[in-house]
Length: 172
Image 1: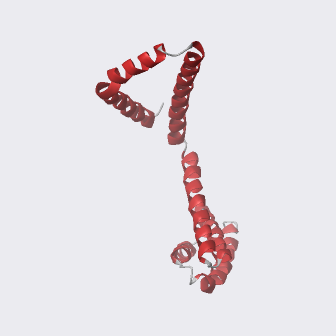
Image 2 (image 1 turned 90 degrees about the vertical axis):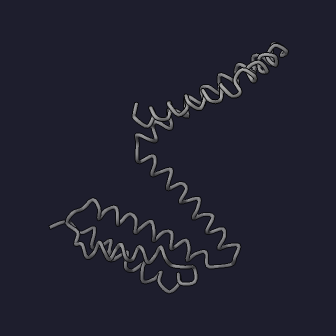
Image 3 (image 1 turned 135 degrees about the vertical axis):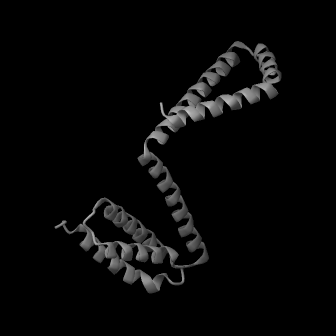
């Protein structure tokens, strides 16, 4: 178990302790009185729900621990938020009547640039001038407004293909 799990459990125990000091006895008495008044079927359902709740909490703790120990899973969660943002942006452009195809192409180019940047980070034989121009073009793409997309997308699409050809060459 990692350090993050340890900090999470300390935080969780402190939260439970504070909750118990403030509300514990009062609510526990109310739940007990409520439980006593239940018939047999309601008691079984209540206990089953409590068991499900604790299983859910345990699974949540293990999921949190797993995500903290595996950076790839963190990245996949972050990319999920990015996809949701992109879909919201596309929906906004549809509602406002702007060019939806251009924004989709911009998102695809951003992903292509990100992949090329990741590859250049892994390979040491790529010229630093190419890497800096790749980063500059990526920054330009990210800063484009919807009104400027049609002007630059064709040039950036051609540039990303050229970058890909240069980066995919074998190292000498």
